[in-house]
Length: 354
Image (cartoon, rainbow, N blue to C red; front, side):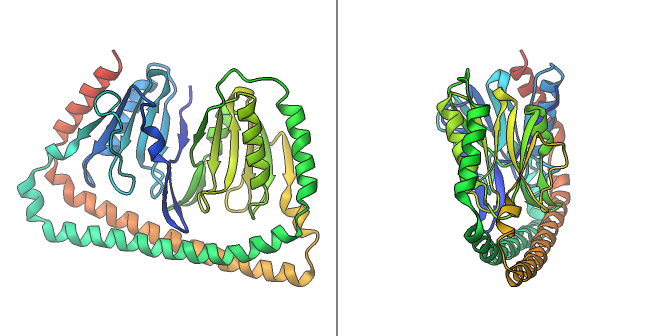
């Protein structure tokens, strides 16, 4: 069984956007909240636990890092009502029901404090550099959002939303005729976002859960109302739903997954291109663009070029941040007792897989 990949954090025009809080509140019987700095082995600890559960044949849901998608920020073991998550900044977590449902796993105990203090100046400089790069990235994303807003306003003004609502009603009548076997529960998770590797979207997770995919060709948030309507209708029919917000604008809905129906509605555009073969394709951009004047189309092409330049700047600074973080980890690495980290991971695996 293939693992799934989601994100619970995103780099947006408003800064870091977090969905991590939904892990708390007694959702799991055992939620491990890892505490430890750069290079302390958090990602390796989580990978080790995830691999152990995968070997049992159970599915693991991995939570990838919003800045570096090759790194982990969490792993969820649904069949065991258990999870492990990085609870350090920028997604600090504190237990809702300490020990009963959530608990800390402190990796700072494995630091050689004298060795770390001997490299104090390097650690401070690299940590400050890392944070400065993120501030630069968020400035670029904020500028991109402001420019993009002008294009979105122009597209929304030309969109025939009445026609789209009619289309939505037809889809609901066809796809959600029966009642679901769930409780109408909603989980919110990002499917991707802006990272050091550029725009990422885990459409492989969509295809693993949902064989039938409606692809909405939409670069301006034209499908937000449609997706919200579909998600609400599915909830009312008692289908459990995964709502994937727009990582640039988390108040908007970008994808909706209804696993029990094997049905997904995903947004596709130049920044996140769905390359699979969709069950249906809805060309929302085309519905708006056909009503634009030649001058309006030329202006929107110019705006897109500016958006692309600002996105490239954001990705460049996220890459710089990742490089600073990698260097910081290398500084910390000789200061950490990794044999102790590994032994603790094995202890937690034994507790999890009884």
